Length: 167
Image: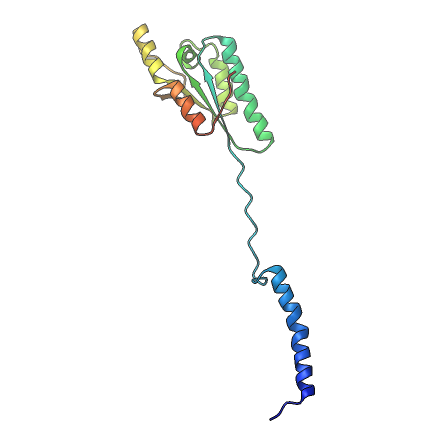
């Protein structure tokens, strides 16, 4: 069977009428245009991490630290951004977290009530030195953890990307 020139021209014209726009569409949109691409994931918001050191037994310094520990969470909650706060007490600052000598223990209860995920830590080396000097074990406030070395803990947190704020 022989195909006439006219039939061949019509068939070629029809093929080109569909093939050229299809090829152009494929080139402009990518070779897998029919497959939908997944939406890119929004990056998780960065967790703001702040370490607040206290190494003074001055009640004014302690209240300034508490003010910062109350205001930062409020600020980040309003922005709906995650945060972490760690208070590191060493040297004379351990008095802030002692049950018998803390001049701000009532304020710390308020902080714990408003920001229960705040972490309070005491330098174990300082605590042991105070116990030797005073001749009795120290009693710390509830929910206070020990770290081997306060300044060492601050350095570790900074090296891990935490911000350091001195009140």
